[in-house]
Length: 77
Image 1 (cartoon, helix red, strand yellow):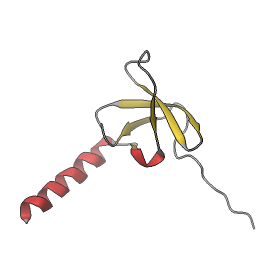
Image 2 (tube, helix red, strand yellow):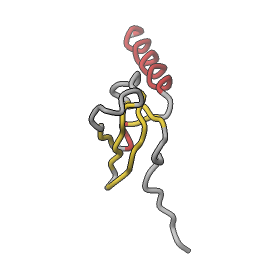
Image 3 (tube, helix red, strand yellow):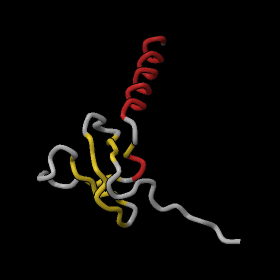
Image 4 (cartoon, helix red, strand yellow):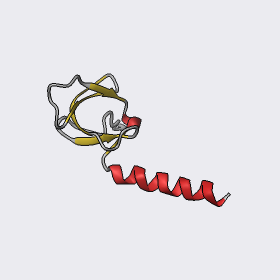
């Protein structure tokens, strides 16, 4: 019985967003040594940005919804 290990969550060409800046649309260019190399979607001349898997999301609205929930919890205290 062999185990299958999934190394990368995203493939080259996938559109993703960084958790730290969910308004910036990124395109995965390549994946090497557990690091994603991304280009900014609208500005291909800009330097590549480098992220780990845990720093990227597919849908930026999930981040904003989580932030809203956290704010509600803080205000309730």
